[in-house]
Image (cartoon, rainbow, N blue to C red; front, side):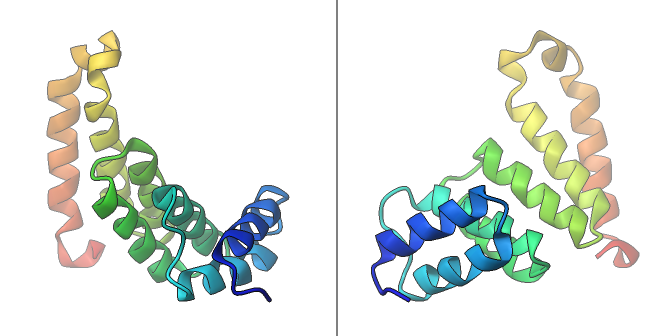
Length: 137
């Protein structure tokens, strides 16, 4: 396997796009071990985090997706993939709250979301509280 990060990322993306996540993960892992790409890093982290989830490496997936969120805070795509991982981890209240957060962030572009923003914020806050309870963490 190459040590060329660009080539590793291209291979990972090609295999991932072809639905061959179990093969793609080796290329993602190697690229990450070498420091990951400098260009379009968030896209790499999203692909890597999503693929980690798809192969059952859930804790690693959440860590990588949270790194992506730290690099581009509040990015809707990052938060949606994070929500999917939270759901896979059984942290359902936190997953739904995260999705509601995305919806609320996008409300300006959607009159229907804007109309219900207050109610959605209330549900998000309720779910965030439930996610903090011991049986849901």
